[in-house]
Image (cartoon, rainbow, N blue to C red; front, top):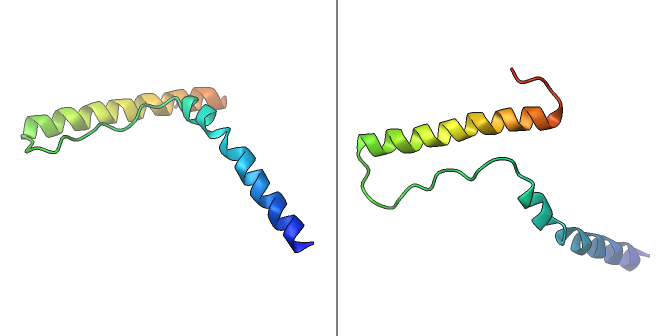
Length: 72
């Protein structure tokens, strides 16, 4: 009986792993800004931070809209 339970759990996890690419494609948010592996000036840091922050706020609005809650 234990083997059957273990086997069904393994098969269920294997079946769910095929659905994950669709979930990844449904994400309304962009990936975080990629920080280059070089020296950054203050202006570079501000530009990258600003782009990341703007996308984070935009993502929050999208998620709130998709969830049906009013945007605050």
